[in-house]
Length: 170
Image 1 (cartoon, rainbow, N blue to C red):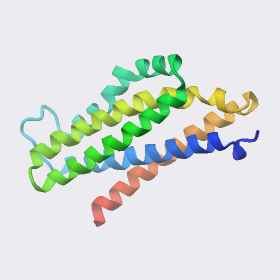
Image 2 (image 1 turned 90 degrees about the vertical axis):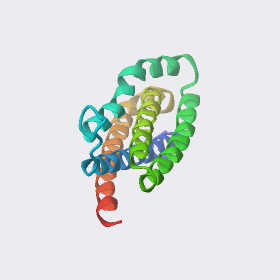
Image 3 (image 1 turned 60 degrees about the horizontal axis):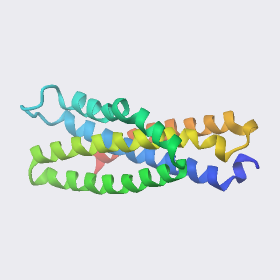
Image 4 (image 1 turned 180 degrees about the horizontal axis):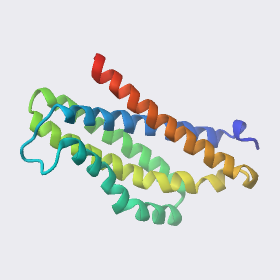
């Protein structure tokens, strides 16, 4: 079956594109907020802390995420990770809402949400790539990997740009 008519592949590609876009809008928005926030109790500047908090779960959990994806159906890992993402983004909206009430608590909440976003991605990523051989023909596998990688990078770029636009104009 051609990639363009493979509904499972199209659904996975759209799902991961939207997830990467969402993650990067949120992360970049927090980084932009961190430019204007000085928090005396943070050991490093807010932007460095935010990037570290987002990256740490990949180091801590990516191997575990891959191992789980090898033990249970990758589709189930993907669905669970996407369901978790919905909850994490709801927490993220709450963290932003706190900005006008208690900025320090808002920063802590945003950092917590970034950690959860990274954790969700660390579990989603290995299954996202691992399911491709089960989903597409062997002759299409390299192309499928390229499409998933390209759409991920497009989502990262667009998410960063959209966050900047939102931060500047809204």
